[in-house]
Image (cartoon, rainbow over all chains, first blue to last red; front, top):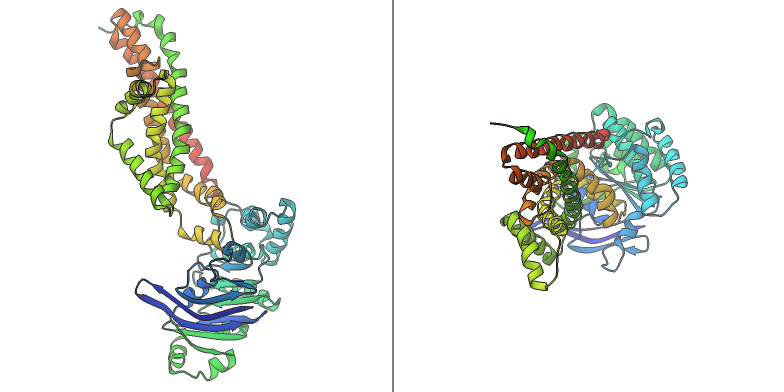
Length: 240
Length: 218
């Protein structure tokens, strides 16, 4: 489904990703973890070209994302993304946030888009908030709307960039539950997270990044019980 | 001594200038807004030549007196191309071109003040640039810049009085004509001043209403 080959990314002289290669299968749920500054978010953002890789090849489905000839806007329609700070459109209602892209990008009729949005909003438990503006919502609610907005495009992959890091502790659970139910429904997902328990519970595989390198690529049970590398052991000793 | 009795019969004549002033202000505002948005988009865009041209445009129109620009358009351009231009179109053109420069700076600032996450969220959803600007970025920028924009319009409303130098029959010009005809300049000018002041109050009020409307999502 997703293939990453020798991915490099530098910001000026600062090399953030130093050659990452991995493959993600359909329906697989990947948790990307590692210390801050390890390049996790950059890795994720390279997948839909919010960051342009300095070197390397990324393929999603049949599309070679890193090929200049690929229409990246088309690829992005197929790759949902959820941000740490939600980035809902503040001047649009919850419903408009969810329906805008299906109507204006995919050309779906307004009626159909609203039906689909209502269904998604029910799924994330926010149907009754559909007429509200984002400023009236709590952080957890905003993030659930953001998830619905991304899902409204019917993506085949979902990327989550620290989806609970900006939330108050009591709101983390409601968002993680939505993500978990999405994982259970068979969505292919890549999740950058600091929630170790969540990663252990939901992920099929853990990618552990440190210093711009993919240090471990293993099953959660293996990773959390007996990490191979000293760096992963170090990291886990600090966070668990 | 103030003696308004001499100018009272002429007040309706001065009031008729409101229409002329409004035509200039509305015409120039529309031109200025369109131009301002286009220039602002050039300034934040990736195309170097457009950026440089927009910056150059702004620096010329902000760096020279408005009255000079007005007279250039009214007197010099017809001379250059051997055409006639009436005072009204000349005034609308001069004020529109001039306020376009100022408005472009206001809008550029407003666009830059929109959270970068809005751009990323739009990109991630595959929203094309034009739609993103029109539906996502500009509406948010507009909300931020409403106060500055209203200020620009109020300034324009008052500054339009300098069209008197090219003979357009606006409020100011009419007050001067009335004053000149009966030597009661002071009274005639006070009448003009009161009219401008009331117009400014109304514009300020309308601006506040508009701001309120745009803030309903807060």
